[in-house]
View 1 (tube, one colour):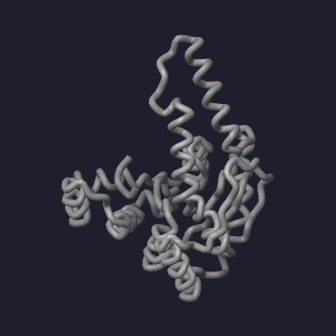
View 2 (spheres, helix red, strand yellow):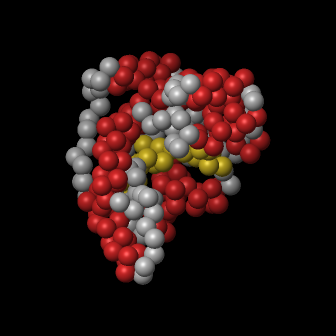
Length: 249
C-alpha cells in the first residue's frame, strides 16, 4: 500500500497517517526526516543536499526524489508507505511518478481529506480560548493568522494536486470533518476500492499518462496551470471516489 494524504493544515493528516501505519503495517516517510538522515549518513545524495542547505539554498526536487527512491528500497518500506511532505506541487508529483515507474511501483491512492476551512479557523479559535481559560501556554501554531497564511500557501501550491491525482485516476475524497474514527473508516473503504486486481500486473504508469503528467507539470511551473481551482472554505462533501519545500521542516 503506497499512499499520499492531501488536505490543508489542520485537516487531520497526521492523525490519520498514524492510524494507517498501525492498521496496515506500513511506514510514514517524512521528506524532512529522510533529508536529515541522508545528510547524517553522509550518502552521496546526502552530501549534495548538505552542500545546498549549507549555502542557504532550497533542496531541488530531483535531490529529494533521489532520497525518496533510496528510502523506499529499504526493507521496512517494501510493504508500503505514506509519503509525508512530498509532493507539495504538481512538478514534484510528476517527478515522483517518474521515480516510482523506474522502481516498478505506483501509488495505490491519493486520499483527500476534504474540510471546511472556516470550521478549521473556528476550531483553533475555540482551542485557544479553552487553553487560555485553563492557563495553559499556547503553541506557536495556535494562531488563526498563522493558519490563514498556511491555508493560503496550501491553496496556491498544493491544492492543484487534487486535480492532478483526479486525472490520474488515483484520487479518493473523504469527509475530513467527520469524527476521527469515521474518517479512518472512509479511508479504509477507499483503499479497499483502490486495491488492484492481483491477476493484473501493473508495474508503473503507461507512457501516455506520464506524458500528460509532464505536460501538467510544465503548465504549473509556468504559472499557467489549467488545473481547476477550488473555492476556499467550501464545506466538506460526502466521501466519494473521483477515479484519479523540499527542505526539512
